[in-house]
Amino acid sequence: MRIVLASNNAKKLAELQALLSPVGVTLVAQPQLGISEADEPHATFIENALAKARHAALHTGGPAIADDSGLCVDALAGAPGVGSAHFATLTLPEGGREVQRAAQDAANNGLLIERLQGEPNRSAHFISTLVALRAADDPEPLVAVGRWQGEILREASGSGGFGYDPLMFIPALGCTVASMRVALKNAHSHRAIAAQQMLQLLRDVWKLV
Image (cartoon, rainbow, N blue to C red; front, side, top):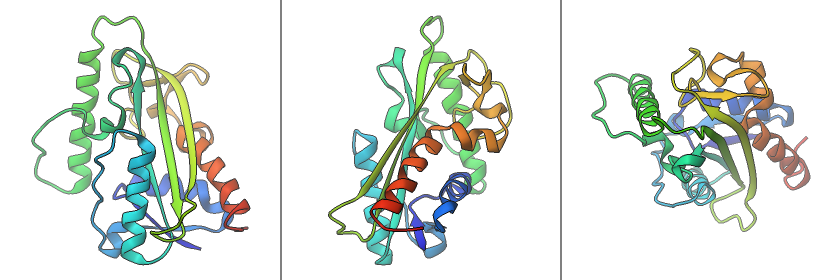
């Protein structure tokens, strides 16, 4: 089954494609179909994920799936939260989307380190909210939520992943997310937890096998 992924993030596409492949889903990123990014004006992950999925489904007339994810830091009252991708304000450099995303990631990580300066409570979690729709007016969206508990380091470690991965240390695995092999991350991440829930929903509700 072909489902449009309401995202322009190539790394997120690859990660979700691997996680949802057991039910024969083929994800197509929305830029490949000329679909623009949806507005994300809401204060919660689930509302933004639903808005993105509806936007993609409306433009294709078919099924769509969206992931709204971010980092919630206890000492910052849940920030950066839904604003995780644009936590820091900066003028993006010239170049392609991936160049700009890397610059934004670096700025976000720098601001997080600054905001937690001298803070003993480093507890935080990644959250992923997945929403799938059969069509834009689907009255029964599938919703799955995954949380991955960890701690924010005082300096980056590891060169893999994206976003806040270099700062997010997972005590249960003894390393940062950016230091993990892809297979290990895909087995334990917040997105993996949400995807496993979504897999079961796709089987039970959409009858995919």
